[in-house]
Length: 495
View (cartoon, rainbow, N blue to C red):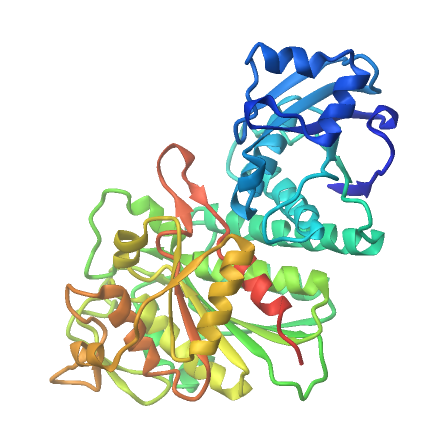
C-alpha cells in the first residue's frame, strides 16, 4: 500500500473515492459541508430523508457526485462527535476502509482535517488509518486452490489537520503501516495449519527476516544444543513428536552493542494435542493457534526492524510440537529445567509453561532491561476475559503500569491479575521442586506463579493471550495480537 498527503480543497482531489465524515443525526463535518455545497446539497437531501443517520460505522456511497473530481463520495458515520474516543475512531476508520474495499476503489482519499479524537493529537488518526489499512487488506490464500481476490485499493491519501507538520504525518503513516504489517505477519503464521507451520517452518521464517534486515541476527538452536544447555523441561514437551524442537533467537541491534536489551519470549507450540493428557476432539483444530505467542514475537521483531527503533531487542521463541506417542512425557514424570529446578508433570497439556521456563532462564544471559513473555497459556484466561483483553501478571509494578498504558494507547488492552505469594503453595509437589499444575482454581494466576520461579533475576511481565490470539466461529482466524501493544511498549523505551 502507498500513502500520501493531499491538502487541496475537496473539489480539486482526483481520486476513485473520497471519504467524508457525517456525525450522528446527520450533522455534517466541515469536509462534508464543503462536499455538500459543491454537490448541489446532495448530502443534505440524503440526511433529511434519514437514509443515512451518521451512526458510528454506517456508510453510504454517492456515485459521480456533482462538483467533485471523484467517481464516488463515501459518507462515513462517526457517531457522536463528542464521544469520538480512540476505540470509536478505529471502528469508524475500519468501516470506511471495508466499504472502500467493496467498491474496488484503486485510490481512496480520507478527509479528516476537522476530526478530533478525544485524548489524542492530530497525528494519532494518521497512524491509526495506516494500521487499519494494512490489516483490512489481509487475505489468507496459502492453502486455497481458489485465491481470495486482493483488495483493489493501492493508494490511501489523507487530508490531515491544519498546522500538522508534514514530516510528522509521514512518520505516523510509516509507523502505522509497519504495525499493521507486523500484525498481518503474525496472523498469517497463526492461520497456517500445523502440518506446514512446524517448529522448523517458524525457524525458517525468522531466518528470512534476518536475511532481510542487517540489524537483525538470527540463530537457531537444535535439540542437541538445547540438551547441552540442560533444557530438559522444554525438550520434555517435544519428546513425543517427530518434529524437532527449535529455539529461535532473534537479536535486533538498534543501539550500541553494550546497551542491555529488552527481551520478548514467545510460546511456539505449533500444534498442541495435549500430549498423553489428550485434549477433547471438539475444536482441537484450533490448537494450531497455540503458537500465536511466537507469531506475535516474530511479527513484532519484523516491525521494529522496519522502524529502526533505537534500542536493542531480543526475540526468543521456544518452538515445539506436543504429541502423544511411546516416547512422550507421561503424567507423573519428573523433568529437570535449565535452571536446575525439578518439575513434576501432573498434566502434559500444561506444556506451555514447560517450554517458557527454559526460554526465560536462557534470557538471563542478556542481562535484560525487561522481559515480556507472550503465550496462549490457560483456558482460565478465556473464561475470565473472553477475547477482549490480555491477562497481565508481573513481578514489577512499573513494568505492568507501562504495559497497561500502552495497551490503552494501542487499543490492545491488558488487565492485571495478582501475583501474590499466597498462590505459590498451590504448585507444591511431594516429589519435585514444583508441579506444573496448580489445581482447578486460579489457573491463569498459578500458571504465572510457575513462570515467576524462573524470572527472579529480571523485571518480567507475562501476557496470557489465550482469549485474544484468535477468533472462533465464522470469523475463525488469528488476530495478530498483541503486536500493536508490544510495538507501542518498545517504541517508548530509551537506551
